[in-house]
Every structure is written in structure tokens, then in C-alpha cells.
Amino acid sequence: MKLIHLVVCVIFLSQAILRSQELDPQDIFIANTHGITQFRIPALITTNSGTLIAVCDARVDREGDPPNNVDQVLRRSFDNGNTWESLVTILDFPNKEGAGDPQLIQDPQTNRIFLFYGYCPGRNELINAPIMLGRHLSLQYIFSDDEGISWSLPIMVEYGLKKDGWHSLWPCPGRGTVLSDGTLVVPISGYDTKEIFSHLVFSKDHGETWQISGRIGVGINEATLVELSDGTLLVNARNDTKKRAIITSGDHGESWSEISYHPQLVEPTCQGSFIKTQHKNQDILLFSNPDDSQKRQKMTIKVSFDNGQTWPVKKLIYSGPSAYSCLTALADGNIGILYENGEKDPYDKISFVSLDLDWLTEVSD
Image 1: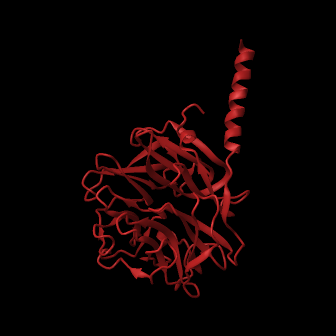
Image 2: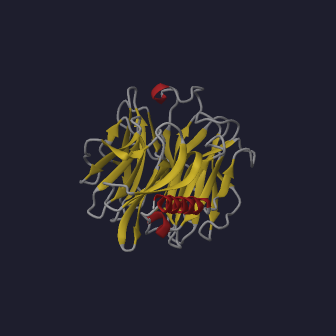
Image 3: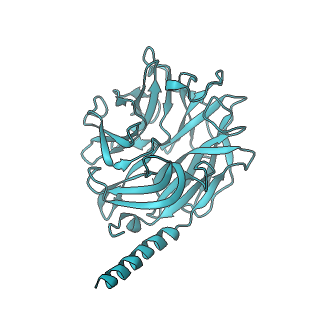
């Protein structure tokens, strides 16, 4: 009997591993191609017409965050990620000026696509200084009214949003959120001379004007957001505890709960992606990140069926080095993920894979 049980377990494990190996990712942005040293920080949306738009940092001369020569590049797909158009540069600042941490959002009524980013003037050579005081970042955006073919000139949006003593504002990378009433919501990070913190920037008039929410919390950044069916805003954010920070608001961001840390959402201090979608007429939450408390590795998607209280399902997408990611619901019903990965370094390339939602939500393996 024990032998039979062992054989069944081995067969089951082999099937589970095989199913993971059947994933067929495409490498969308590859380091040391197109004259770019490194591609980082993926952003991905499915437009209202079903087009996939993928954007990322193009770190031209060397690796590293701004201040650096960092452009923004784009690729598009019209067939749910099976094929992709050639790479196009959509933001190119001179010298060591840079545009980093892209965040995409589309207005569902006007179809305008916004690309938010942090602009760095490049006047200071300190990179990743303590509390980031070695660089100044300004919150800017460009927009497209033709599915990403052409883009506006840069627009500074932080005027009227920054408080006295705030040093910088920049978007949380990945994607913004559209609330059920059409409000555009852009999670942002900021810092002053003492600490890093998070807010939401939002627009109720299709991006004509922007306001800022109450402070979500301090010591957190790269926040992600979903709106639950009862209107609650649920934030999932990076921090230094090795577990994702969870914060909620019941008044559209005017006030926020105390920060809690979810024991099932392990992280090595890294960005993650967080979306709400539907499966079999039920709202579900999806979260992707490196599922490891020590290293940026094991890119994994986790599933919650109870508004983020528990995460009973997790699927390994890539076992090797991996870091930032961005999720989107595809027009064909699958889930797409754009994620950083490599053989020895998580920043060798940015790949895309389409995943069957039935497989993602299966509890059995």
C-alpha cells in the first residue's frame, strides 16, 4: 500500500512539474540588444480594444536607476501576445536625464492611455542613496489617443499635489486602476528628508485634473491597488518586513487602516503586481512576485477567492532569478504576465507568457 501511495505521489508531482514546463514564454525585451544595456521595470495593459501595450525602462549606457540615461520603450501585440510589433522608443531625454518606473492606465470612456513615470534631471551622481536623497524625481506623464502609436509631450502633474518638505514623487511601476465609477487611480511613492511613503493620485474628469489621497502609510512603496465589490480600496505594497503590506480604505482614500502584513505573501523586498478579474462569475484577486524571502527568484502567481484574506493557490511561473512583473487580463480570457528574469541575473530580459485562467485557479496542484 505504501509503495502504491508513493508511485501515485511521484506521478502527480511529475504531472505538476510538466504542466509548469509547458509554459512557453516569449522574450520581449532582452539586455544588450537595440543598443540598450538593460531593460527593466515592466508595465503592461490590455486596451479597451484588446491591444496589448508593454512598456519598460531602457537603460541605455549602463545599468542602474536614474540619474542615468533611461528612456521608455514600447512594444504592442494585437493577438493576445502571440506576436509583437518591433520596439519603439517613446520617451528619450538627453544626456543623463531619465524617465523611470512606468505605470500605464487607460480611461474607459475616452480611451486615452496615460503613461506615468518619474522624471530625473540627472544633476546628481548618487544612485540609490539612503532614503533616495541623492536624486530628485518628478511625477510626469504622456498620453496617447491612438492605441500607443503617437504620444503627447511630457506633462508635469505634481504641482498642487506636493506638500511642503516633500522631496520627490514618482509612480508605482506597473499599472494604475480604474474604479467602478470611472475614477482613474495612480498609486505613487514619495519621500521627504526622513521617510518614504505612499499616496494615490486620482482623476474624476478623465485626466484633466488630478488630486491626491490621504497618506496610505510610511515605510512602504511600489503600492498596488484593487477595488473590491463593496467599494473598499485594497492596497498591497512593498516594504522591508519580507511580507507584503496590506492597507484598506472605506472612504475612497481619504483615510486608511493600520498596516498589516500578510503571512502568505512572502517577498524578498521587491515590486509585485496585483489585479482583480473574474472567473466563473466570481471576483478573484491575482498577485505576482518572487515567492522567496531572501532572493529575487521563483516568479509566482497567487490566487485569492475571498478578497485577499487567504491565498490558497499559487502557480510557479519561473523558478530561476526573477524580479518585477505586471499582470493583465487578456481579451481571450487568459491572464498575461510580463516579468523580469534570467539564468543567473533576474534583469537579463523581460518575458511575456499567457496563462489559462482555469489552470491558474486550480487548487489541486
